[in-house]
Length: 163
Image (cartoon, rainbow, N blue to C red):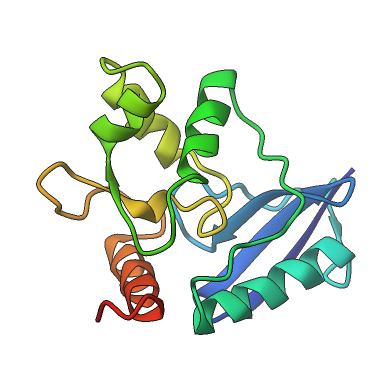
C-alpha cells in the first residue's frame, strides 16, 4: 500500500511517497520523473515517516550539516541502487564529478549510465544528487532544476562556513 503526502517545504511544494513506513520518494512538485498521484494511493500526511521527513527537511534548510536519518526504500535497478548508495557517501558541502562517481563504483566507462541513474533518483535532497557536477565544475542536469541545485549547494556551503 502506497501512502503519500504533499506539503510546502522550504524547498517548494513537495510530494512524498512511502510503503510500510519506508520513504520511497521525495519530489519537488513539477520536477522531472515525478510520479502522478494515483487513485490507489492513500493520503496520510500525519504518518510517522512523513512527519520525520518534514522535520528533517526543515532542519536541513537551517543546517545542512545534519544528516538525514530516515528509513529509505527507493525503487530502482541494482545499478541505480548502487549509484544512489554512492551519492549518500558524498559529504555535505562537497561535490563529485560524474566520472569520479563512476570510478568509485569500479565502472569507469559507465559515466553516462551513472548520470542516467542520478537523474532517476526518487529521493531529491535526501539522496544528494545535487552534489554531482560536471567535470569542469559547471552545474549540469538536476530533476528539480538548476536554480534549486545551486540553492542546495549554496546552503551546504553556508552551513560549512564556505560562503
